[in-house]
Amino acid sequence: MISIDIEKKLKAYQGQQVLHVASQFATGSITKIYGPSGAGKTTFLKVIAGFINPERGKIITDGITWLDTDFKINLPPQKRIVGFVFQDYALFPNMTVLRHLEYATDDKAWIKRLLLIGKLETFTSHKPEYLSGGQQQRLAILRALAIKPRLLLMDEPFSALDPEMKSALISDLKVLFKELGTTVLIVSHNPQELDGLAENEMELNGTK
Image (cartoon, rainbow, N blue to C red; front, side, top):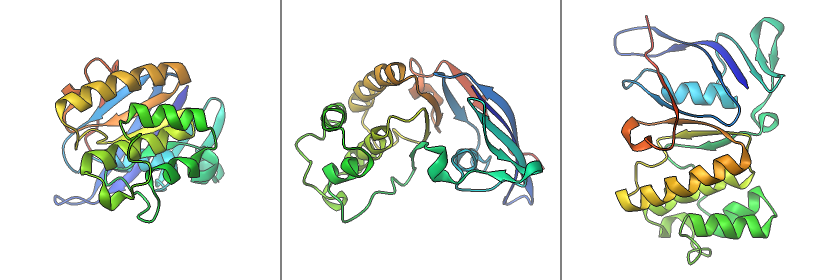
């Protein structure tokens, strides 16, 4: 179970807005997060991962306090061990596809399985600049999964994929998530694309 109650100031064209989220996510659940541009969807994920600090808040995961501003508790990202799929992929330009995964795990069988799921098994020696946008996006997803995360945060993870590839990947990911017992939060501008994957949904809308 992940319990979150946070407040974070947002910059907005209309002036100061505040992202306030108070919610619980069951272990192993998959939740799609949607809302208008500027509502704080990406910010929300980064607060959970520890990349951004909120003005006020508390995050408790499986009984472990990650964040409690009242008691000045704030675990760094490396101790939260969260899988994160960045919207801009955030790949390392000098690392090959294989090296990206080896950097996260030394489980060769797991790496092989991920490569097959991402349809990247014939691109292991390629660096990001020689991959298409869709291939880069799939690599970003595989890298996040390489650590077998208990919590996976995905920011627009399927935006560069064609419908056929997206459908196949989502089908495979659904199996993996269940196998790992991973709790997944997925930000999407198109919530309908997650039908059949996410059983829960949450709308964010920063308020003044």
